[in-house]
Amino acid sequence: MLKFRTLNIVFALLIVVFAMLQFVGFEHAWILLLFVFVVYVIVVTLGVITVKWQFFMPIICNLPNDRKEIFLSFDDGPGEKTKAILDLLKDYKATGNFFCVGKRLTENPVFAKLIVDEGHFIGNHSYSHTSNFPVQSRKKITEEIKNTNAVIKKITGKSNRYFRPPYGVSNPNIAGAVRKLNMVCIGWSIRSFDTNDKEGTKALFKITSNLKSGDIVLLHDTSPQIIFILERLLIFLLENGFRTQRIDKFLDEKN
Image (cartoon, rainbow, N blue to C red; front, side):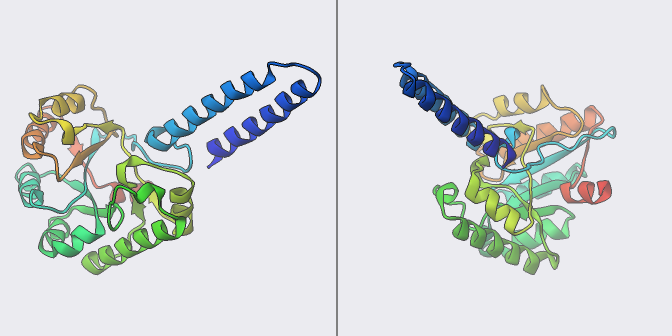
């Protein structure tokens, strides 16, 4: 919230300055104020949708290390492609981080258990993942996170403290819920845009052309070409000496 609060303080001070200018007869002060307001709206909007800015709360977007470890993350599952994803990870001895939707965990208990049994990480990605999640009240967002944490604990037997907001959106209500529940927010350093890639080649290139140690890669269980992308990515990782790791284990070791 520090960046957001700082912006608000600066904006409030500018309002005072422009009000004083208007009072002493500077007739174009309102034009300057309008310009500053437009800039304010643009900056806040970008802060809402840009994970790396950490505009409203701390968000871990990469995990630097000198071991060529990267972090494959899969959002929105579990679903019909989760089993195939798990099979590929097993074949290539790779580890995944699944930020799951609570409702889908409840609907797919077999896949949920399989994720855990095969040594992968399950994190919180809200309970419903509805399109209006970012604009819900702080109370409702808090309930969604708590409900999914309860589902994860039932499946894994362990409490979860890692949350990835749907759509990568953050705002004061989401930040407030995260702070209240003492969650750690996880973002990404490479967004593949795999859900919009019908062939999978663009997403694969976006990942492999920029990949470096410590990167958190964003993929989706629901991507139309996730199996195509993942298999070729896993081959690339092997050929280039990259290792995959669980986010929670890495952070536990670090702390």
